[in-house]
Structures are given as structure tokens and as C-alpha cells.
Length: 141
Ligand code: RB5
Image (cartoon, rainbow, N blue to C red):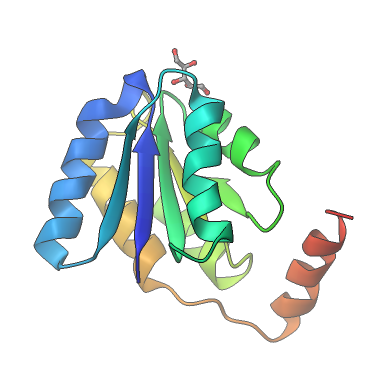
């Protein structure tokens, strides 16, 4: 597992907290730093995933929403802006999300670390959800 992670100016502290947490857990990551224009960072992180260099990504901005909007423009990316554990869990189980977006102005770092763990530790359920993920992919054409 290799995580690509990046943020904009609104989420530098939160990114540092997540990096320390990943380090503590021994999870390898590529820190792409901070970019004030969040779509630019969203693209940089997502390209690491679509190229196969990273297995998934974490994108942080003020709300998590701008990052998720930008990331979801990229073929092969399924990004979810989450601020609760249920969504973080089910976006892995049912949507096979490959990017977790969070808002540093929406949630605190304690919850963000919890959502990170849920997202990274929950596998895709497959089965009937594979067909639906395939339908999402078909929308890219
Ligand atoms: C930056 O001020 C803010 O717009 C950005 O961090 C993010 O919340 C956008 O969705």
C-alpha cells in the first residue's frame, strides 16, 4: 500500500497530523506537499494513482469538496469527501473509492485520523457493487 497525499493552504496542519499517523502505522506515503490552487494538487495526487505509483490518495482542503470535485474529473478516480465514519467505510465497501478527501475547516484532526484508518483498512466488497462501479466507470466514456 502506497498513499499519495497532498493539501492546499487550508489544510497544512491536518496533513502533517496525518503524515505522522501514517508514519506511526508504518504505512508508506508520497507527500506531494501543498499547492494553493487545490485542483492542481488534486491532479498531482490522482496522477500518482492512475500511473500505478500509489494505491490510493488523500486530499485535504478547507472543505474537502473542491478537492473531490477536481479529483473526480480524472479518469479512474473515485474520490469521496467524508466527514463521518459511516461514509468513509461505505465509500470503500460499495464505491471502491480510491481517494479520501477531508476538510480541515470541517472536522478536527482526531476524527480525520479515524476516517483515514477506516478508509485504509476497509476493503471493497465487490459482488453486486462491482457492476455499479463499472457503471460509474462507463460514465467516463
Ligand atoms: C480555500 O480557501 C478553500 O476554498 C479550499 O480550501 C477548499 O475548501 C475548496 O473546496
